[in-house]
Image 1 (cartoon, rainbow, N blue to C red):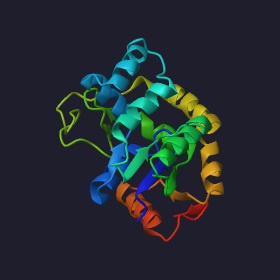
Image 2: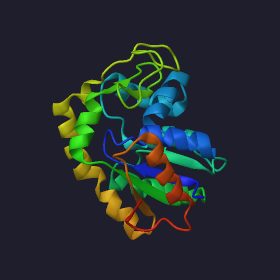
Image 3: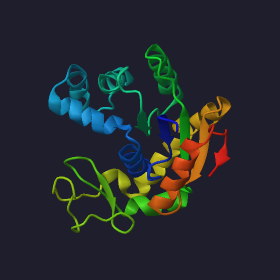
Image 4: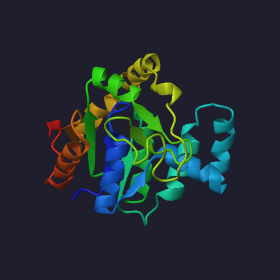
Length: 223
């Protein structure tokens, strides 16, 4: 079983949902940089303080602050993890490799959750997010137990501004330009497997587990 994993996929592909399930079922640390940033800021950690000013001003958090938050959580004691949607570009991938090599914790598998763009736009239109804990839901595919309310913290769910169709189209363009090259990069290293993400959550999770339980993640393999 591969236990140091990156999940790739466009916005709305289901990375967060799949990462949470995988982490819970396989005993992995779930590492989402968005969640880690919010937690570090709330806790007032050194890396959180470095990131807070950028977040408060609505600026993108620079890579050095993101890595600071990530590696406050990820150290030599965390030997099994799933990185949820990170890295996002080639520069981040190179820095991640460097830092993991220093800890002797190289990546073992990268799984690309593949969903057509048209389906992603439709999916994101129905997505709702908790402003408190950051958990995502979908009005049809993954509804909360009580309509409009987060299962975990009870806050009212909201539609994110970046889930509006015109914004989603731009986000997908950025993904294809900046992040999609990582698919070929990890395939060239023999780390990549691809999963058809345009199915129900449990079907995707089964194929994801099958990829990670295989003797090797075959480059470009489609589960």
